[in-house]
Amino acid sequence: MKQIRLIASILVCKLLIFCGRLMRKRSSSAPGKYALKLCPDAVKILSKKVKYETICVLGTNGKTTTNNMIHTMISSKGFSSVSNLVGANMLDGVATAYLSKASLFGNLKADYALLEIDEATAKIVFDHLTPDIIVVTNLFRDQMDRYGEIDQTLKQLEIAIQKAPDALLCLNADDPMSSYFTKAVSNRCVTFGVSQEVAQPLQEEKEGRNCLFCNTPLTYEFYHYNQLGSYTCPNCDFTRPAPDYSATDVVCEPAIQFTLNEKETVTANIFGFYNIYNMLAAISVASLLELGITSYTEAFEHYCPQTARMELFPLSKPVILNLAKNPAGFNQAIATLLNDPRKKAVVIGINDMPSDGCDISWLYDVNFEALTNCTAYGVSGRRCYDMALRLYYAEVCDKPCVNPDPVPLALDFLNTDCEVVYVLVNYTLIFDTKDKLEKEVKTYQKKQKKGDKSCN
Image (cartoon, rainbow, N blue to C red):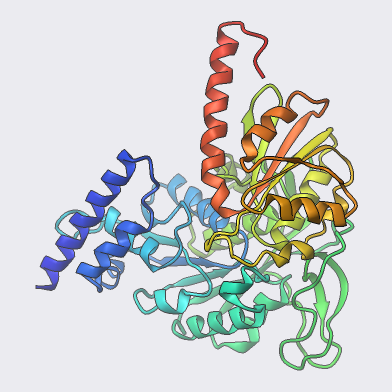
């Protein structure tokens, strides 16, 4: 009977994915949601058929990028995997990943399972599968109406990890919220981090300002952004662990370059200092899996940034689309923008749908005051006027251009004296914005072939 239910759930999942694609939808969660109603144990059954390890990537920022970097490395060595690459990271999305990979008769041929998991719901997902490696990228305040304060997220994640006592933890040594687990749980741990001061960080609030064990304020030798850096507790033995995978000699412009464990120089054509952490996490997992990668620089040559992770759209001038969904993410996007020497225009899009978080008070924790060197400013989304007010209070721009849709603003800015347009939007604006920009690129390229130099 259970096998019949499984076959029915696989059939329903595949059918819903097919119908969704006909309607130009991602179909990354809903098929799994309805399939699980037919066979609630589908993930439990299929997860046991994975040949080797199951790797779960958790954390506030960087999950999708890290997950896809690891997938690139696994694929480059000829291995197959079950993966939720588009970021559907709750149980329904995990179920869709497994069921879509399975054959109609319930067989699953996959060497690895590679899954991005929402940190607040990992305790539910881990009832359905057993992770062998758990990566924690970082923990920041995010979607207060959903997650609550960061200590609540930490507690939920600790509950999840305690359900997987045999899993190896791969932790961000520079984040006291993540490295907390080196002492708080019994799991084996490896860590990664940046072992030198890289640049003057933005002025921003530190989430983990106090020791999680004795509540004493942490002291920092230096910090990179938010609470990430070299810290120690003056009252107890909690301190930044020496990373097993360490980056030094860091260069962020025009591309990322660093020395890994004082041995190998690693380079990648990727924007943003924060991506060094994603790269280190991926390298850590690749090393633990013993994939036999001889050059990580060559491995990252195969990696393509996912949707809206500093994604470039080549129009008459470059347009760069980036997802920024919380204070830490926005501050790092701003830092990347500030490091770009070109004349910049910026469009900021804010929605308040449930997937974004309906409470947008976090905008006042973002250092928009640093955005003083742009040639033009635009605000968009359902909360565009709130964003305009935030720029006013930041004394950055009294009257930004306003349009609920960020794409027309970006196209208008191409006609100004800027050299690049940055579009920073939160979650529910991402896919529509990406689709429209892709259409604009196709139109622009067609006009270029016809020799129409009047196109934008």
